[in-house]
Image (cartoon, rainbow, N blue to C red; front, side, top):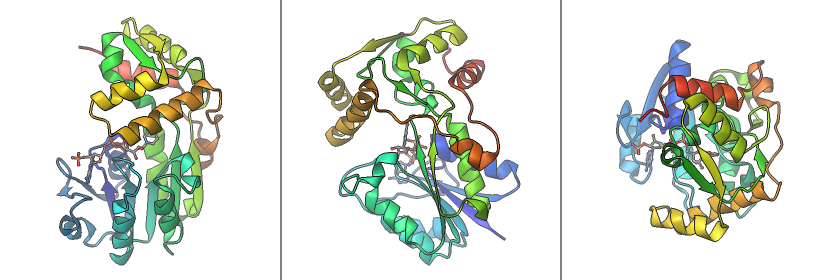
Length: 274
Ligand SMILES: NC(=O)c1ccc[n+]([C@@H]2O[C@H](COP(=O)([O-])OP(=O)(O)OC[C@H]3O[C@@H](n4cnc5c(N)ncnc54)[C@H](OP(=O)(O)O)[C@@H]3O)[C@@H](O)[C@H]2O)c1
């Protein structure tokens, strides 16, 4: 019998991964502080044993990326001690840089001795419908320092499909997937698409990077995280966002979903209704 632990099981990716696995008939145990199958706090190792008992594979995600934080690396080690044969880590393309907060964690997973797959997703399309930008979208103005830069937003459901495949199929071991949507679009194009499918007017407005960092901090984002996010958006503005890849297709045998398809689904699900 195999049991897959899905950390962050109520989150954007974890919830979808659990759905994919369950609908394919796999045994799943979701874990997070509240609302999952088992309660688990990454900051409280005493809560870990119940989640780890009997697991054979694990999806790992760091809910809040911060410098100097090694809680997920320690949790990854605990999953290996618990006997997992497969680890799937949600990381970031920038984690290749030694100074990135997830760099050490990636090294731990790659050197774990068990089958591993690392996912480097682009910005989630769901940021517009259930993540950090949904309030602004509903208010009609999305202000970010991304200029007219283009980026290939990825549908979180595609991330989840790839993660579920990697958690259950040895073919994905040792792979690092750069997960993107099929085309790079601007934020203005994204809000235009959302306006069209939702029937509400949503406007993209370019904002000064330091202003964006300040606004996030006021909204409770830790300064270091706020700076990291602003930095990534400025990279997009400067035209240096990653290009689309075919890694979703390599992993799943079908292309990644387009932003328009994601947006039509989100609208049909009532995500932008008040
Ligand atoms: N959004 C993007 O565009 C984007 C792009 C690339 C990478 N990422 C990365 O994606 C990751 C977030 O993944 P996600 O969007 O799937 O998650 P999410 O929607 O942010 O949800 C976080 C999950 O983690 C749980 N959690 C939070 N604190 C926890 C703790 N101390 N111990 C245990 N569980 C905890 C939450 O539940 P509880 O609060 O109940 O514990 C929830 O289930 C981050 O590392 C981010 O950098 C995001």
